Length: 410
Image (cartoon, rainbow, N blue to C red; front, side):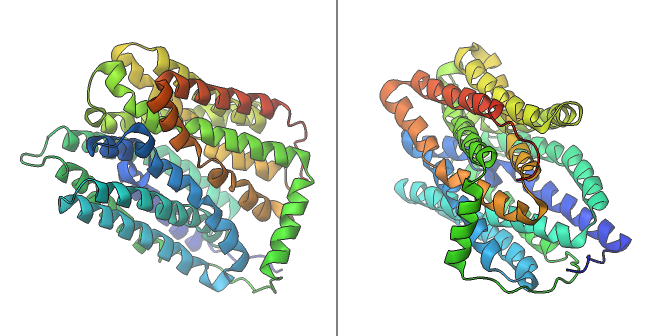
């Protein structure tokens, strides 16, 4: 295949579009990131902990979509798929807003929230994969590095702003806006932001790529799985990613624990929790990046899992308002979602990287049972049982990461 011809103007344009897209995604973080706010909303609607964790569970279940689409979508439609994925995410947020604003019986918005988690799991995971595909066709490696550095330095600040704004709204900062209209307003803001993301994704300039013949889907899938399973390091990394996703899924359950830890309604702190989460995520990005540069990617992956373990223990044991720092540890550990796939790249040959990372991403739907299980454990055995399970998942991920010995391409 001929090398892509990418001009400096394309580098600048597409890098700026990437920055603007993630600025809006992070500004809408209270609703674009399924977990804390959704758990607080379900709690206000009268659900138990099991139901409150279902939006997170169904969101993870949607992670299988990128694999199927990456094997079937022709190159000429990649930008269109990105636009549709972001546009549908906006539509789903708008539907939740309308459901809340019309004051329907609680079981209806609860059902819509669970379905929205599933559908947004499809669209968000698809958007993530096809955003990277568009960047690969629209920026050079140096251009992507510059875009990533600029984007991930600035955008967490907008997530903090969006989260603090959400907390102000949920605490009655707008006169006359009360439950459930306060949550409906958050989803309205999310709808506007994701509509902007959709518009920006339409503006990517992509270098042309020749279409290649595609083998039958089932045969291609079977061969890909067989090759992946033959690599012990990649199989271990898949299990690590599954355990890491399970450990991270403690986040909405931990937000429900606010009532026991502080004695206040989880709704009163959901925005502040998101602000702490993303503020520390920025610090975690510096920490994990430094470890990867000076040590190894494996060390960064282990550190991400250790941060999840630390957040679980801190939230379980810390008294009063100090409890909220647990979400800072979880926010920093959340960056394992970038470093674990990056480690997978280092374990893969260039010609198998895309396939291997698509298969690695299936750890998300495999771990989709965990949020509901956390809620079930909290309902029937107390929050301590759910925290013990989360801690076991995080520490198991750390231990298995130490068993991955090979660091060259498979």
